[in-house]
Length: 389
Image (cartoon, rainbow, N blue to C red; front, side, top):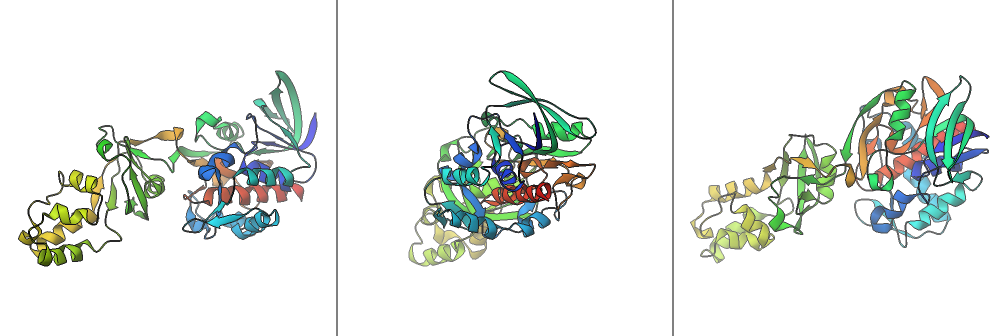
């Protein structure tokens, strides 16, 4: 069987590429249905982009690489596409856009957009080679192997995150096979863990915080879990955190706790400091922190300096996670195919212009909040346009 373009991976990036790559396209995936990660994303409503997307919202060894694709196919282009299909959507917070109804609407839209492409599901890739002119790829479905010859090969098979959905890191293997470098990968947008389960009594407690990891700060909600810390602020920080590093948390970013304590000293002087703080803070957390931060005594007994020390301790709460929950729950994979080996305009390998890498497989990782989907749309579009030209 011969085709012009073979796309491996029928996820967000792969389907977007198939929609724009022109005629004679075959897109394959090992899953039973296309767009499985889209389906489960955003609680089933798909946080499909972010209105504030810029290259600054992405992590890469080359922070400029993503600019070309993001500028040529923007969040507004994808929003216009969604609107043209009559799919209702809303902003949840911080520019994050979600479907009003279901993530399946996005999948159906992409399936329609790529209707001229052939789609093979439940198909395994067992061997890829190149004869100097074409790629030969052995595909197996229904226990029947088929050798497909293709002029263009697009790797849109994602990273290692959520292996229960079939993530394998295949794109990295193919990149290495054809001489491209791969930036070391690790889980990102992932909960952080502590082997001593120190926060188990606080499981389920959440509050707005400001978390800093290696100089980068995010202000969103944090959630205590049986295994450690989660919530948007922690997931964001996890992309910058490395093993052995501390994270610093401001537990009172939106609260004038010092002013509240000083006022209470005049009106409720006989009450314990912990009681006053509990008026602004989850009581379970106050009880836990009282074992680690000196908050003893009544509020009337505290000097301005002492109250400031308590507040400063709450603003600079330092913890050293022992690890993360790993690829099992990571939303994305940090690292990937080295952008130094790719053309930022076409997403093709510089050393082999008919071999393309798009989406999560590339060393471009977005923040939480729709950015990674936008990279999938933009990089998939860029490769599709190059192939179609």
